[in-house]
Length: 192
Image (tube, rainbow, N blue to C red; front, top):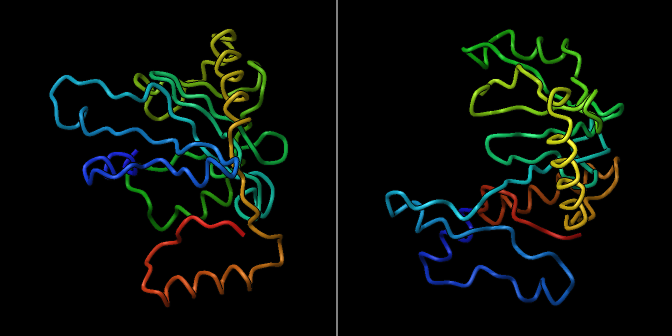
């Protein structure tokens, strides 16, 4: 939401009309300045759609953009996108992380299953269980299924750009080098 917030402070319209005319989804950003600058003002955002990438190396790059979950306070639904509905890097770290054992623990851990049924799904009350240790999917099947339906509806609005295929590493690296050569310290949004 920083995009719309900073645009609003600068008195610039954050909407991308060219993208809209091309059939791309609207920018998902709210101007939070009223909530940040006024005591007691609620945020206009009532839910947060979590993005993820499906396919590619361990489901992380050269893949399709997907909805990986939804935060609808106080609840968080997670959807595994790797093979077998597993969520890569879904591990708990120590209070002092990262540390020298972090990488070994991540490699040794079995990725948890966050499936699409209450029996194998992942649903947490993140206000009462910040560490996401107590899965509520089985004990709250209606809530789980409602949030899952919401995630599926949001998936229909997702834009997934072409990022190349596995083996296009040289092209991707060249793009990164080009951004750095132009003085950019970050990768900007782009469409291939």
